Length: 115
Ligand code: FES
Image 1: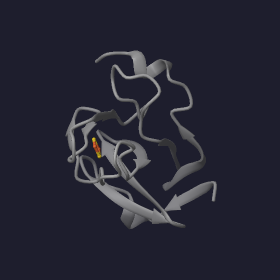
Image 2: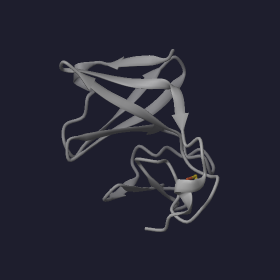
Image 3: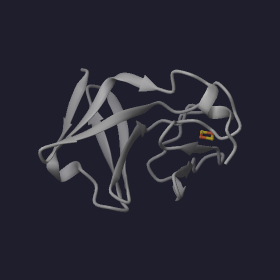
Image 4: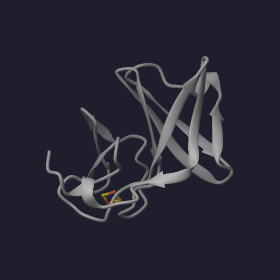
């Protein structure tokens, strides 16, 4: 399970999101201005679904307790070493793929940046 092809009907339109389930894993795929971001559905704090979280730019707010995650890095701005896993998304010749082999964040440095 390293590279998942997203079914065309599951690729979200601009400004929307979709829930992707694959081999026991749940991901949310966001389309922000044509840019696709994939994260784990479960909040790393206490497991709430991030699918319905409110977006402010690239920051997604968990509906349970309000932690905010940067969709690009998975980090909580201002907090080191804690974040939601994100996955690289590629588009190739009209197909969309999520790379499940290397979830991020793998380093805490970007999490230190305040926004
Ligand atoms: S479960 Fe997401 S902030 Fe607590």
